[in-house]
Each structure stands twice: as C-alpha cells, then as structure tokens.
Image 1 (cartoon, one colour):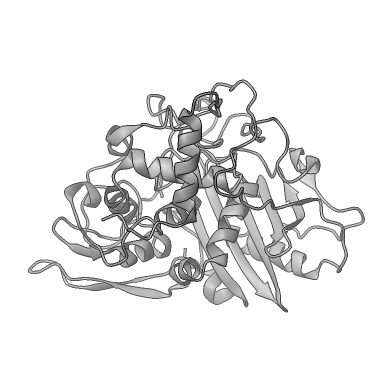
Image 2 (cartoon, rainbow, N blue to C red):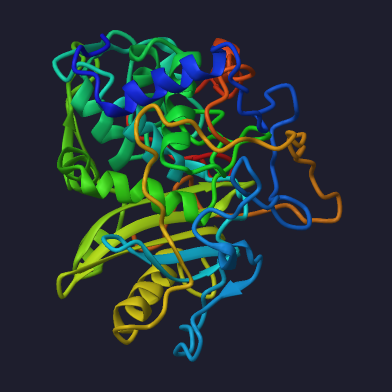
Length: 412
C-alpha cells in the first residue's frame, strides 16, 4: 500500500529518525500527546501554552513571541469583529508575517490538523492503491464521509474525502494504509519538524482532541504554504465535488461537496480547511490570491460570533491585501530545514500541559463538527510517539451511518 515514490518528506523523516538514535547525537526532547489523560472538552483554562523552538528561540523572529497583538508600526486599524484568540496573516511567497495575535500559542487544532495529515501521507501512499473499508472506519467518531465495511476506496478519493468533507473515517482508512497509527504519527510529527513547525504535536491523524496535541497560528500557516505550493495537494483541497462509490447491494453511490464556503464566496480563494471540537472551538486556515499576491491566514480558538469565523478570515485577508507596499513585516515564515539537517539543540523538555476542564465554565453549545455557518513537536521525537492502535481506537465511537454525518456538539 505504501508507495515506492517516496518524496523528500519521507527522506527527511528517515534521516531525522537515524539522527535520534545515532551515537553521540542528542535526541530532541519535547512534549508528547498523553492518551492516558482525559480527553479535553474545553479550551485551555487561562489560555494555551506558549510555543518556541527546541533551543528556546522564537521561530520567525522575536516579535512573534508576543502573546497579544503583533502589528507593524503605523499599521491601519485592524478590521472589526475579529474575535479569534490566535491568528496570523502572512505573504505566502515572500514569507513576511504582516500581523498576528498570539502566533505561537499552542492551541488545539481540530480538523485543521488534517492539512498535516495530507502533507505527511500523500507521497507515502501509492495513488493506484485501493483501501477496503472496515468496521473501524465506519465507527469513527465525529464527522464522517460514509465509509462502510467492504467498500473499495481509491487512495486519491480518500484524500479528497479527508480534505473536502473532513472525514474522520477517511483519516482512519489512510492511517491503516500508511501502516497504522504509530507510523502515521511519526510521519506527521517528522513533517512538522522538517517545516520547523515546532508548536505542532500530532496525536491523532484526524485532529480529534487528545491531551498534549497542539498547533499554532504560525504553524498552520507554514503547513498551508506547503500544501498550496504543491499542485497535486492544492488540487485535492480545491476539489468542489467528488463521488463516493456504491457498495452493492445496500449502498448506492453519492456525491460529497467541499465544506470550505470561501471557495465560492471569497474571490481568489485558493484553499482552506476548517475545524471544530469542543476544546478547540472553531479553527480555520486558508490562502487566497489577489493582484498576483498570495496571502495565508490562520485563526484558532474562534467562535461564530459576532460573525462566522470564515467571515473573520475574509476580513483579515482584505486587510492584508490592502496593506501599503513596503510596510515592514513583524516576522517571517521560515522555510523547511534541508533534508538531513537536525533540529536545533533542545533545552530540557517541559512536561506536557494537562488539559483539565474548568468547573466554572458553563456547558458549551455549538454547531456541527467542522461547522461553518453559510455552509458550514516539537521536532521529531520517535520515543514517546509509539501510541499504537489504542490511541486511535480510544477516540472512536460506535455509529455507522452510510452517508456523511455531523455530530451536534463534540467532535470534528
């Protein structure tokens, strides 16, 4: 099932794995997901942990270590109604960060993490392979595209289902095709390390919450840049509709649609991925082009009020495109490390933040998983990421709808 056409991302992950185990080479330590800790059901009390590179420096420039707003001197006023607790807008091509809020805060990513799943697995899997659906696929918790036991699903279609409809069942099927949870998470965290996305710690391929999992507005922008710059990946994320095959005699074929409303509502939209869980709240990362200029925007820990999160993203993009030429950036989106180059030397690892519910917080009521109204790590650390099948099985529920399903409150 694994493709023989292994790309640079796999070579880098393999090289880093060798470096971790090589004599005289210090393994880069960092926080890891904690499947034994209760699944978080609310955002981090008091705000998310602050991220940094393994050597303690701030990736992209010191100014991006600010936990609040980071704006150019004499910048125009920010658009109103931007309530996401963390966000960033940057130039995709030059890498200039135009503005941000808590850019390295380590938030729960929800299904925006699927951009990393796509990036890590696409070159690993044979595009001619066909994956047979299982009971585990159809039992996936949260948003599902409708895989059923015995169904035959080409790998390219599973990637479309992952990104277009945010199918957690598709994420599980791709995980099996890649060799299982351990291998998939190694690839995801290895890819994040190569990108210098050190705030990103993948604990599930779907983005379902697990204690210790995280990403940041800065990292989501790094990951989306790689997706947009790869024509094959961009085509997957931009696909408007796809057809899931029939599984005779019980299940007919049916169409799925892209759940990113900005593809049709925002002129010049290139790609986007939304997300929702109770702990992450609403998240979004996307890219757009206007006048030959490409921008990326990411938003985390958002709400659908006073305006939907995608409307907040649109306002930030408009602000970025209107920013006067020559405005000094507040930081930069760094480029991936060359293959074989290790991560910076680490400081002593800090224990992962344990997510605990705030007893004073009222119950959260929200829209469906990955719901958008209007349509609605740390470097590679192979030690400690051997989470095994139990990690994914622990976040599976037992519902088996054939057609795409969205749960009203919990998961994306």
